[in-house]
Image 1 (cartoon, rainbow over the protein chains, first blue to last red):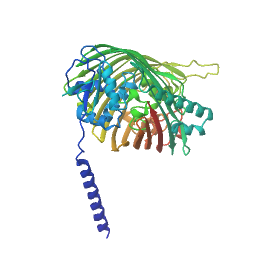
Image 2: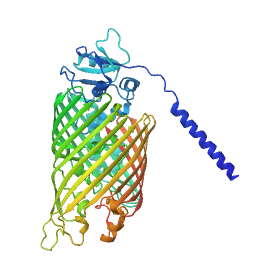
Image 3: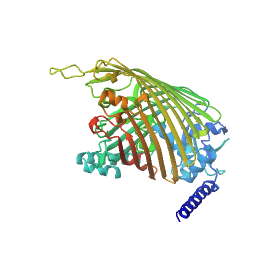
Image 4: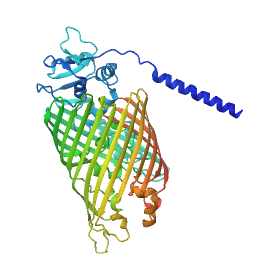
Length: 150
Length: 413
């Protein structure tokens, strides 16, 4: 009887392990892309992933021509922000937040400017020289320029 | 105002002050959004903790009754005048039972000048009171949102000697090097440690009357990040010097038994972290060689004994659901690597062996109801009392095995 109980427990444990494994390999749901946008006055045409990480990580203070970089982001709970981190920067949103916190609370850097919507993102990036941000998809009459990140 | 409610039981005046401060900070945070004006930012944090202990005392708690005297408040301002000039400062106040009384102090205040900045490389200098880069977490140790749990691993980030390691006036040279998928950042500082605190005196010379003065010290750190931080590794090396000035003997012959001693701490931390989507694993190992001389107390020869402090922890974090995080950690410190059990120490001094080691098993959970709030709960099972303050725990009352439940609400903007 006792042996049977142990057998049942092992079976239950195996089932639990199998479930956990299944969950861990469950395909992530397809995500919408995000596009990096910059102020129309920015000269650069292409950013490397590394430079984009440095800019959104608030480590790169200026563009090659000396214009200050002004970084705009969406709140972390927005899927656009999550998609941007994963698809464009290839990092997890919590890592970006940790980097900002390290800078802000040690005084060694500043946080990016948070906007509440894509409309506000486009508006702020279009009027701020040196601005960089991201939206879902740039459309032809947007007053901002898309920036390719490779 | 979740976090200020518990103070009502402690001190109504303090509670009122806390409530008004939190309200003011809340209004301020809402008003400033993220920037006061172009390049000027204001940020801050507040936390309130509850401590429940079975034995011993930590941050003002007494066994069997909850302690509400664990609180952190801070506000900082930074001004990025141009891409290569940054001025920043932070004021903070912290309560931790007899270990910290809430006195307002300048946490850091410095000018940062970028000497060279391009896509591959940054090189700059910081002058003023700068936070000490020591291990992964020292620079932001008082900000709850930057910690994995309520307490940092006390083996390496001991709260009782925090003021010594936290920040110091000096000059720092720093830089970043960007490689194809890697980032190397470093800082080298020459500093004057701030050590005049009763906790450090208690910790270092066992309550002898007198005060410490920092000698010119060095601290260097290099951090490497691979692929945006999937792997992070660090090495921190420091040499800290402090000098003890004993209190003069008074009319009744009272004063310090100790002579004008010197302590040099040669310390190093190796840090490693692996970050995955749901899991983060962190491990740090610290070794600190204490070189002591000149105290000359016949019945406390241990004050002039060179020892090596060994400390390490292993930690894993699991983001098991959106807004939720679980923590598991094993944390150990031995004040004398040659006498881990403290028995030799106990035989020589008659003091409890448990003063010389601490092994802490921690499990915790964190919930973020919104991006600016965090609620924490964690349980510690500890063997030893090496990181407990001697100001709270007399040798006679120190218990070797004890448990602690901590709760904390934290807010930041």
